[in-house]
Length: 316
Image (cartoon, rainbow, N blue to C red; front, side, top):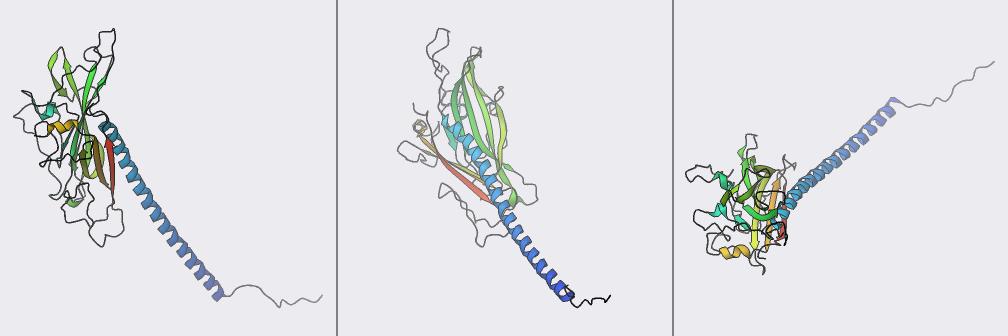
């Protein structure tokens, strides 16, 4: 038998193999670069969505509280010996032995003021309560707001009609990274209850009831919190360098507040952008004269939520 000679041998040369490896490496590199870019973009989008979502959750809670301002519970005529409507004394804060801290006016806004002390913290006129300081002299943070509204608890044998005061305010928070320029603020909340019954006819706010709390952190990484007050005709109620207060000349406007514009600005926890901006960025605020800083050139994301809230119960 004659052996067949193999005249054709299929295969690749070393050069062809190296070329194939090189092309594959280039394709894999391009795919990895594309994946990295898409993944980075996706992470930025999800981080921004998470920041926006948490900001809007807090704004929603504050909106509900502001809409309650001035609300009074009406139980109606009954044969149970319960007064048909709220029978608690209204305190303006101008009575003898009273102050702004005691007022029952529905909304009080203090502009550019950090911190808040409940009424039972500030009873002693000689008490030396520390005043919170801003992180930076150019910071505008933040306005504070107090909201008073009524409620009812039929099962309370001592005081069925309730009156609560909720205060939102800001306090500085240390970022603990060694760089004071990265320090931020937090939104805090305090809830007080008005106690007025046969045992306490004078009446006073307390922060020590079962449903009360003080300095509850609601959200950190706050940059600014701003409130604007308007009447029913859309007129801004800022007069003579102040909003209406129980002890100033336009206190009657406290019951003309029909709309509250609110702006909350939050910052990302970590640096968000890869590069610093080419030009310094300036904060967007509701008031044109609010921010006078030199601008920001860091890599943090700042998200601003602005809402207008109609007060449903003030002036009724």
